[in-house]
Length: 265
Image (cartoon, rainbow, N blue to C red):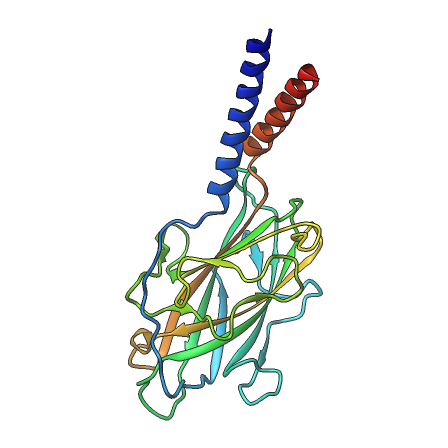
């Protein structure tokens, strides 16, 4: 009889271990970039930033009230660093399956115009205020951002040597606390990927109909600007909900452990 109880307890612990492993895998970041973060004495201010929606079926680049994006000049007191832009996004329900773990993927194309005074010989730093409106029926429990070029199947992630990266000073933040600060990232000083997780009840994620607000800085390398002083890159984003399989495994583990403890008692 004791052997049967021990067997059931071992099975329950095994299932719980598997569920825990899957949960950790879900919040871990693949890869570890060692991209060197350039230090520049002078960061070039930009004159204009244009935004293009690379995923028209998923995200609308406007405020929920229909207002257009607003650009704040670099010399405005509300500008965090050098050139600040408010990027309002309304994320719609995805129109294509799967409808499970992946809630939505969308690409935002950023076009940065250098000053018209001459050739870019320094990197450019931009800062972005992002208001992301969850107009889906899913509760977002984490939020991902990745830098690269191209959109859709042609998207090429930023690498270790292209000097396109998220700035760590000042650090990226979830402004409204919907997600945990600081975000996980693939490199401490020159990240190409940011991953904000939730931790309820303090960091509850973004429920349907809610805004998630972020602030982040991006280093745009001087080599990315063409002879006309224009640089184009992509900010890929997605939000997720808990893996259904993970939820099932955790539930089974809890039931198994509860049954084993109850029988032992």
